[in-house]
Image (tube, protein in one colour):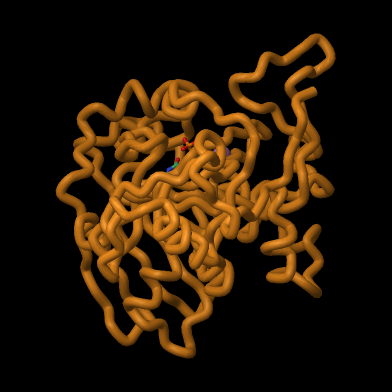
Length: 315
Ligand SMILES: Nc1nc2c(c(=O)[nH]1)N[C@H]1C(S)=C(S)[C@@H](COP(=O)(O)O)O[C@H]1N2
Ligand SMILES: [Mo]
């Protein structure tokens, strides 16, 4: 059984020798003119100032696995489809519309976003609802930074997300069998969206996000099941009402709005108590299966968001 480490907050102890698993690579320009060629001490100071510096020390999933075993129904329903069928998809140029209950609605290009935020390599454990999991070093920025920019109104309670609809480039959106209604949509409560663990990812493993992983911009919410990680986002809307979620709409008894990783609440068709780590051989007695942790191991950071809620009802 591989050792299962809960995530560690390591923002205050970045040293030059924390390379591989705790490696943080700055890939973009920072707002405020931080120089990335700066001495390690300045670099560390800049990073430790960030409240969002979470990481896990588990072994990374290989890039090959993370980019070939995907769910992205716009390109087909099997795990190998997104890699095979997404070649024609063009993630550049790209614009994201951010509006709804905000003071400053805006339409923004990915480059504009990149320019504004420190692109920092992060390591999050990403998992999917089917009970497999991966550990992926995402590149991204906190969603809250983008929300600050548009100034949500006091009446805004939720954030709704929408994926692009492009049947010409997405084979899963044309033809007779349409597995889901399009666009794929999902949402978060505003306080969840503001949590520093909630990021918009633009890359992984030091590279631009591949099409199959949700290029050019996708959500990563590491304490929730995979389907909350909506891909290829074109629209973000602040709302007063709970926004629709594709999987909740399609199978409400199986997928809730919250979708917090919870080993105590089974999916109606399978246990959610354990998970299979992709890339680790599964032994005769379920070797690579590991116990799933509440909130995917991020309980310390996020359990408070749900105090007083019955998580077997609000699943
Ligand atoms: N637009 C869109 N986003 C999506 C999906 C999808 O079909 N379409 N699948 C979701 C599901 S079910 C999972 S498990 C994750 C998979 O992310 P990954 O392929 O990067 O591992 O993406 C989520 N985001
Ligand atoms: Mo999923």
